[in-house]
Amino acid sequence: GKMLRASLNDTRDIVTVSEDLQITKEYLRIQLIRYGDRLRVEYDVDERIMDCRIPAMTLQPLVENALYHGLNYCTTGDTITIRAYTENNCLMIDVHDNGQGMDIETLTKLQSSLMEEASFTELGHRNKQSIGLKNIHSRIELYYGKGYGLTVTSIHGEWTNIQIRLPILK
Image (tube, rainbow, N blue to C red; front, side, top):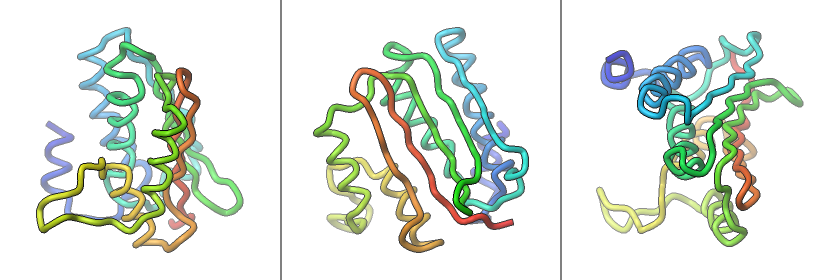
């Protein structure tokens, strides 16, 4: 209920890390009921960044992506780790899973797609590529400029890490 209310009632484009993390935790509460002890979630969040501002609904889709694609609905891995910290005057957020990882071809395609301009075949339709990660990356770049956004790293059969790089804004 809280998650639905937040997505329907909150029209803000920018929220605090604390608020975005709370929505993500609500989503994960549902998934933890669904998957029980087959899913573990670990948090390593620097309390000093909780009031930093980020685009709304940044974390939850990345966590959802990790659960469905990385952990393959908890049949391949069992842990999602959310880490938030500062580094080189930037806010860094990692969403890491210990799932199936990506083969080099898939990883290369995904990394390349993050570098491309968003494209649609016609209004309301998209090409056959997934746009979830690209959408988040594009929103970050539009808000903050080039040099900010997502970086994806992965080792096939072991893990995937999606890193978000943002300016520190309070």
